[in-house]
Image (spheres, one colour):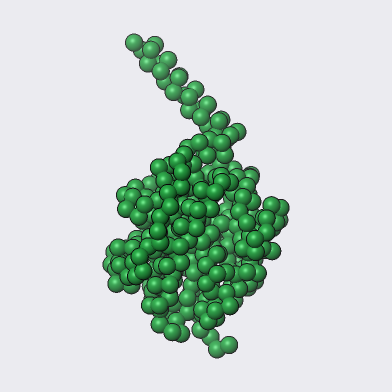
Length: 370
């Protein structure tokens, strides 16, 4: 009996090692197999006009209490002043199932995961006088792994919801209040389009204090010129874009670059081989190397991403020549580091305190006499 048990344990170890090796050498193929929906795209009508007047369509908005965006981690300063600004935050993909190309608004698992993401990713902006985080029929995670018509249809449907939510937000924000756009991953992807199609060249453009489009590559040649805002080149600059993709070393961004190159730029051009923006959140500007001593606080989460603690001086950051934000090593952040030493899940928590201060500083710069 003991020998059979040992054989079973040995089998489990071999299976585990084989799985790790398979993921190491075939990460994209296995990820596609696990997450790409197999059925046809299901056309859906736009949400009814005025649907975003309903609080149920928001994870956070003025008037809601106890929302995850206003969570305060252990070790965070409790005396931060209120920042007089309205933040529109779009959360990343939380729908990981294969049943649909777009996540249903009432999918319980996706909603729970979105709340966890918002706790860690939107909370740096919780000092804002207004913080809005919409629910939307997000494209499934697998849509970013393929190049087929269903992907574009799913992304267009998701963007339509984000646009409708933004219009409701913009109508509620008092004239003269600065606006900050923030999003991660799929959220950043949609906000880059929103900047180009709804904000650039409109009266709203002059009200944008900052745009934090984190976790999705922003093409310097084919996206940024269409968005109406420049890259941030100083820590005190208002009306500019910050964007980064975090990798430990050795960092291998092949999967992310291929996902980027499957898309078109905002000007319609192919993106293959084109450079993307690397902002250094510790410097508050494009490019550069900053040591860990300048990191005012990393939000190090627990294994379930439900809680965490602020730890100063935890990690530095360098913008590599290929546009990746290098962490220099492999900081211990939890079990969700992706293949290639991709710290995508932790893009914002790695620089939580610096981002909170960066946000406040850019709003103050926007409010200063110009």
